[in-house]
Amino acid sequence: LDGLRAALAHEAAFRQELILVLVLVPVGLWLGHDALERVLLVGSLIQVLIVEIVNSAVEAVVDRVSLDRHDLSKRAKDLGSAAVMLSILLAVWVWAGLLVF
Image (cartoon, rainbow, N blue to C red; front, side, top):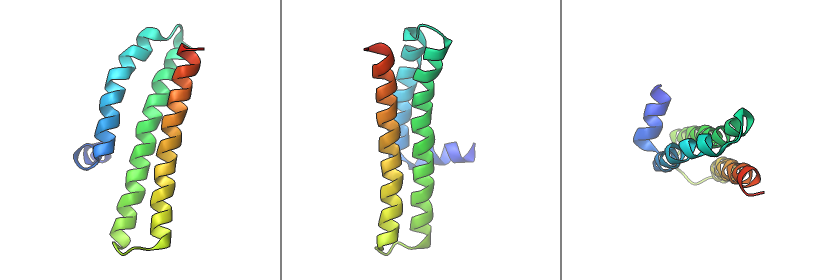
């Protein structure tokens, strides 16, 4: 729970994504035709939050080690951001696949 509190207190991206998740979870539960669709719709949103928390953890550790610019620090932060982007794209794909096609 301390990790969730820290994400809420210190991570703007997490707060933004959480607001979107809180809006979309009821929509996903309502639009899903069966339990599997509901799990996929809601689960893809929760996964974005999970990846955002892991990305924030990576960034915190990198900043704790050193605030100096370093190629490996940049790479670690870029990889974490890429993971968040891919998780968002996956959520969009799941929602589009289930609701549009």
